[in-house]
Image (cartoon, rainbow, N blue to C red; front, side, top):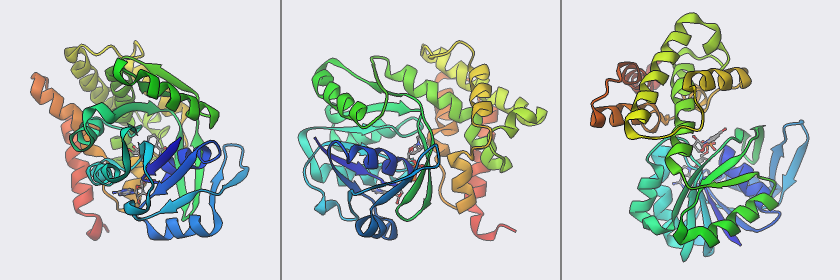
Length: 307
Ligand code: NAD
């Protein structure tokens, strides 16, 4: 299978590196230093047990250099999804698939506008990864990857799942996309924005009574939106699940906290922002999520003058 990884940062490198052992993989990323490091010395992945493995994988910063692909995996941050989709349009085979395992809601819709809904497939992954520097990432957490299937792509997706399994990923195909995406979204709604505002690792949220209260309110608003949409979440107790994840990943810095610490744009608009938008559409009040979104926007707008 010919695979292009569009956005070869932390997660794209993890998936691309492993897949390069079982398929023909090209990493595409505009970060020139990272691409040069991979071209010269390969990609290094520090595994969960601390062992470091090297992967000889092709990488480029030029979409025109990407050969036709049967599968494109989009792993850019949400603000770059449209640009990444436009690049992908240049090399995705007419009968190819573009898969997003990004966080948040709305990435698949943007991809569908550019690539056509028939070629787009979405899922969620419990894997985690962190960038260490050019050509080097840390595998930070593992768990299953769930991908939403549908009748028109069932056969093609089964082949994709098989390749991912060969590369060492546990893959489950599901027919309930909303349950997957919103199930993951609620975890991010409870953890990402608050850890980025407070600048604390995930576990601190459940240790602080005031932070716990904000988390509970943000999650309750998100759960109300899901209920109004008729989404059946993959767990019964949303707040309990978010608290469990925060404890299980206690020392992790959420990706939004990492973005804020680096002065990068965050994914707030597709995470807590998605709750605000859906709340507005459905007539559900979401004051805590609205506040979290505004504070993160204010942080982004004042990166340059932070004391
Ligand atoms: P990252 O910032 O490490 O990597 C994103 C990469 O995309 C960067 O290397 C950047 O140079 C590149 N990029 C930017 N614009 C591009 C374009 N137009 N075309 C191609 N590449 C482009 O981000 P990440 O942590 O790997 O996260 C990627 C996605 O996966 C996000 O949606 C995130 O929420 C999700 N996710 C992350 C984790 C995690 O643990 N890091 C876990 C699950 C899901």
